[in-house]
Every structure is written in structure tokens, then in C-alpha cells.
Length: 138
View 1 (tube, rainbow, N blue to C red):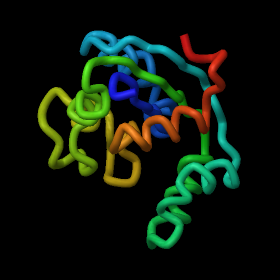
View 2 (cartoon, helix red, strand yellow):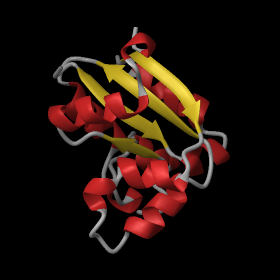
View 3 (cartoon, rainbow, N blue to C red):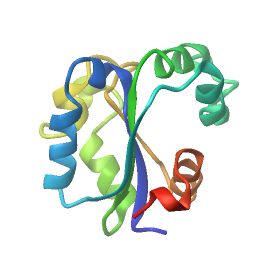
């Protein structure tokens, strides 16, 4: 499973009309898209997905934001996918993100930072399964 990771193009980036440009950068970076769909999560679905952060002070703000609009969820394939995707995303704070990263180009703040990515192979498998059935992965 180390060749698959999970990503989200968050509501801020979709609202700003950047989903297409982000998808282009993903494929230009050598990722194969194995699953992709538009979703609009309910607050409860967002809380389920981010349950690992339930005790964190930002949990309510995060789940409110993630359920505020349409997202694009992605199952991405590439060698060492988790690291490659995190490198392409850039630092959580766009002000600290390297030039050429998605967050440097498309994020507006730490909270509205354009994209999400799995932080481990184990979480990638869990996160992909949260949004995709096996029939939806090609």
C-alpha cells in the first residue's frame, strides 16, 4: 500500500476555482489518479473523518470548514506516495511552504491551506477506505 496515498482538495481551493490547476500539478508530478470524486461532507461526516483530532482545540473550526463546501477527494498512486504527496503539498503554513508547492501557490492561511494529505501509509489506507469503495478505485 506504500504506493497509494489520499488527498483532499479542500473547500477553499475549490471555491477559488483552483481544483483543475491543482489536479494538473498532481499529474505533472507523476501521480496516477486511482480515485477521484466531488463530495460535500456533512458536519458529522467531517467529524468522523477527523476524529483523531477530536480533543484538539481546532477540531470544531476544522470540521466546520471541511463541511462548508465541495471538496475533491483523491486516491493517488506513485512510488513512496505519502512522502511524495506531502512534499508536493508543502508546509501546513503557506508562509513557510517552499516555492512550487501546492500550499505556497494556492493556500491562504494555516486553516485554509488548500489540500490535505495522509501522514502515513496506515492512515492513507484508512482515509482512502473512508471515501472510496474498492469498485471506485481503478
